[in-house]
Image (cartoon, rainbow, N blue to C red; front, top):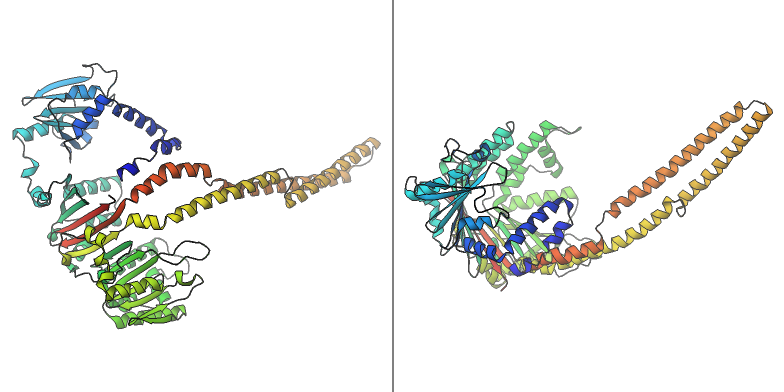
Length: 624
């Protein structure tokens, strides 16, 4: 993955965008620093062992021991950068390498604090300064001296460490996984409080903002750990206090009673994408839809509308969602995708096999809902029975590639883009060897350390195979751009002739008429001149000449409008990317990204709900 993604030509991408020129220059300067062997060696020593970043809310009421903190600095959060470094690293010399032209003593301050030396380096003319020190084999840096002072205080025992925070002990159990490459901890309660305060200070009260903040009320801490051995493993825990939850979140947690996911046993083994979501409260979602529809209706009620969009929708269906549809549904929904074998006519691309499923708890009600919808649409499906399952499908001009079909399999209603995917589901349900649970990559990436009975969501994605299967779509798009550019060039050449009034029939006719009228005007002017010389009345002729000139002016306006109309039609066409430029971008940017993504053989993720937390486990399998 890393080798292929490194082939992206970022300079090419940046240089073709004028607005990114400053960023390009900055990258070149930074790259120049890294190309310095001495700097590269320092960077390797700084970042090659152990690195930590911590962010705290700024203690603005606390004075600085240097007494020179700027107002700008006090408004920023306290950010610690900590790295474990070898003893041969000379901190001051390292920073001098990033400030060419600065003498060894220019812009520096050094002050003692609790038997440690704290260095300060001014950041240009901003009034800000970087402070750093060494504590044993640990390098500590931050913006302003408060950050470094707090670290020294903790080290000397004058302040409690994070390990003493009871809220940290709770999620830190998750850090016990073997040799995590990365560990992250969030105090979500403080983060949410900070964001809420900033939002409320920046804008007038908004019920939607309050509702969003209400949904995350009660969440306390979170942790993530990353390990990388045979697979890339990302494990996260988000903790909450059940007693403090409110609104939809509380309703979800209180009402969620996970059950064993049975959809795995009818999902075909070789699917490219699979997603399942449990604990779905369709009734609550419908109530939220109605509330939002009512809010929008109050803002602007369309003319001729009842003002109840949800009610209008139900009327159009001929169903009462709350009383007819929701009682038929269970608490699960999902979908899966596979590569099709049939080509879509005229397009030349294989139609994907897509299926959506939803659990049903009342089959009689579900069949009644289907019957009402079919009668409302005035269509009747074709029927086919295979291995005891009845498939209902609808014929289309696209043949078997696109042939919407549905069936009821056990406790699930399944609708597919065609019959083939439903037949595969029936085979999988009858033979576990054909089901997704038998897939080696699924077993590897969704093996989950969580209790299966606590799962509320699963996602599985064979990214590399999906991209390989539909890479033809990219070729199709590229060929379309090339073909359209040829058409545009031909039309542009034709438009050039039209603009000069030569080739287009309408333009030629207008120009010929203009020439005739201008000739008549010239004859009238000569006649008026001759009549004046004779001393005779010319008022009638002058009136006729005025009308003639108006006619000429009108023709000139029509010709100009014709030209502008033709140009306006060509503007969108000329905005198509140049095929040569597209080819360069494709070769240097798009292809490396796609080739890198193709190395992702499979990605599996599952989410579980326990009494005090949501747990997420993601595992990625790369090409060897």
